[in-house]
Length: 241
Image 1: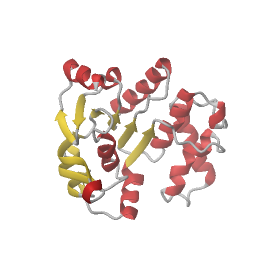
Image 2: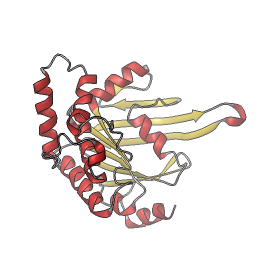
Image 3: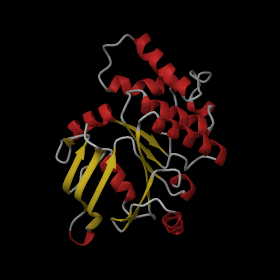
Image 4: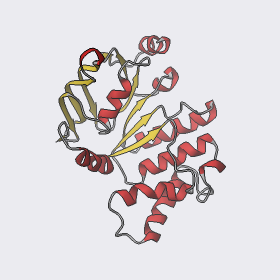
């Protein structure tokens, strides 16, 4: 196993052409170690969401190199990137992205079906999903639809869904952005537990107090990484942006 799970070199992302051209990332270099907890911060339009999308294999860079867990994913097709995502990455989004008509249990089961586990007996898939939901404290909410769950509970379902395929990397995009302080604390507690269990976590957040809990805070501004140190000065500076 290499020391770094993520290595990007001179990564550039350009949208549009001519007068409409926007350079979202400008020759970004970044390494994330196995088992590291990293927070990415920056003002709106800084490039942090673009960076997260590329790190999560949701988008491809215009140029540059991206090595993910020892594999060059820089030029993979959309279908190949989808395969990498399903095998290695779990996503947690600010808006939860749960299907409203499905129960918590069925929402969590979905990634297993997309990832080629159709050959498993339905009871096996269901049992696995139930176990993951219990691990995030929702053992008594298996059959509740999202409308019957609080925001914090919905985010727990989203985390359980991210964990169902046992990814080594968790990408969390503003995971506490829609939550009250108590629910935010609970979600951060779950992320810390996952980190302590060995997961690599990359989290985008605009909340300085949440970023301060990460091992490293990365400041992104105008498509460039401006700082990679965890310090109160950096956190305060980013929060003002």
